[in-house]
Length: 283
Image 1 (cartoon, rainbow, N blue to C red):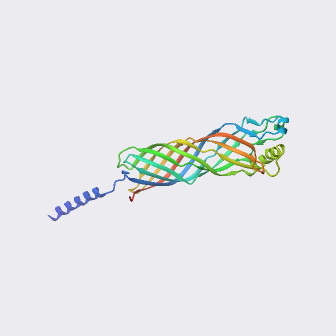
Image 2: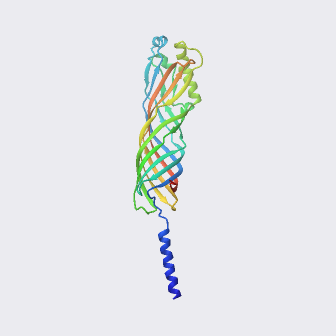
Image 3: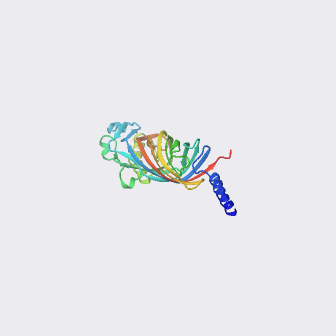
């Protein structure tokens, strides 16, 4: 009798545990915060550098065109690493929306080829973008927050969750840091000559900028649940990005003496290794 009662209680306890054990899968209304590491691998390409000079009589007499391209010049973006903060909200066990943010990546832009004005002056005044001392030409913070709509495959209560996503990103850039040697060459080779030719005095200055853009994003990954709240994930994202980069030279009074630009495409593969924390909203 006692033995039978004990067995009955054991079976009941096991059944209670099975009922009360939390499901590992995300349910509608769940949120996931992810922290981790991103590695950016740009597959970059660019158009030859195009330069616009402030017209001057001296330049015209010397055969210098106020608008010219520099064949053989190009720029590329180096790989970079940064920290990620990602938040995901599940509408169902399979559908979720995700926001990718974090620390902006510090990327470096390398150059190659020579920029030289047309005419005989180009034999004496030029800047070698590929010179070791000039590279990287510019370092910059790249901000690319991403909004993704994701679909999670498999059984809702499995531990392993493959997923795919598609979305958009908005890219902009800040904290441009121009290589000191590159800046000095631009000022000495172009800035001072242009200032003299156009009747400006004082020290010239060099600045860099880049256009903002909206871009599509595509990703896929795997998430593995260690418990109801904790898990790990890995993903790969294809993020095409295109912008126009500018290098400008100004006279001391702010007059634009020279503006060079290139259309820079930096389609990137981004790998991520992440730690997940799942929680329910309090409202």
